[in-house]
Length: 414
Ligand code: ADE
Image (cartoon, rainbow, N blue to C red; front, top):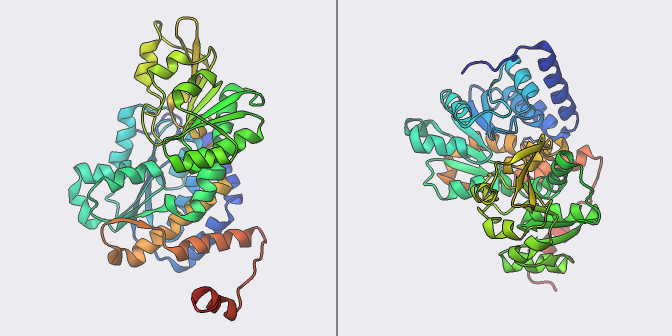
């Protein structure tokens, strides 16, 4: 693949290294795992292919895996989220990295092809593009696969629908990941992306959240904290009930369409905002997607609803004029926390990537016993990540006595 222009620019490489160093400073859990992997080298000679957002935090994960002895190749998991300076620093420091912010669909696929060309034995995915690519077209590589890991709910939906030839560890479903990544991470970084793109004042506005899963809950909580009126639209009755009991207004999306100033989709589904919704929205409404794929807002329908071509009114804001009512789409409907912001804070990715690194080690040590299919992160790994995080925060906790352990396990005593 041709090197992107300016790749060897020393200033770009230096900026990337500085950013990686900053992230490393906020990732004490991954750092302690890297130090152990470097001492034990359990990944010696392992070929790892990763299709992740190319960020400073991902660079820290690549370094931890390389410290454990692996040969790592990385490509972007989204055409809009690559931090070019980080990619330049990684390449300069010997990690084959493919991806450029704003690359087109062909270049994006070329990155995946390049990583697959390294014949990975372990895959790391954020959206399942790498592993599905191998299953769909490079089946000769399947026998060499020790296993894979997956970072997102969307990716897991795809992988569960596939007849997998290897074990995949559902990093996204680890308790430590859910709490930090979906709840605190996306909750904060989605609002950060929206604010960077628009500089809106949230206080006093009505923010409509479509989808009240872990991520939707995080966004709702933070938006309320910023003073917004929050409306939740949700198809699952349990989740809708929970939203109501948390004090949010709950209603169908078509009703909310008339009320919202800002709309955030986080459903993992498609076309949750479409022509009927656009037809009811107020002038100036802002549309953002925080789901993995850019299908949650029906973009063809949005283009179809505007008689004239849309205008880029700010770097990440595209305005569609629907005959006097203007709707503002952020970051082309792509995942707004990464496309308009910097993604999850490093302290959040510390937990995700600690789980990733330990999941890779688990695959190497126990992959053969696991068998094909999606597997949970082992409970011991989840607890170890939580323990390391507490230690890094200087927090100590109580240890149950032998009597308490016995009481909690037994059924006899009342
Ligand atoms: N996903 C969300 N935020 C991220 C980040 N900072 N790095 C890598 N993947 C991410």
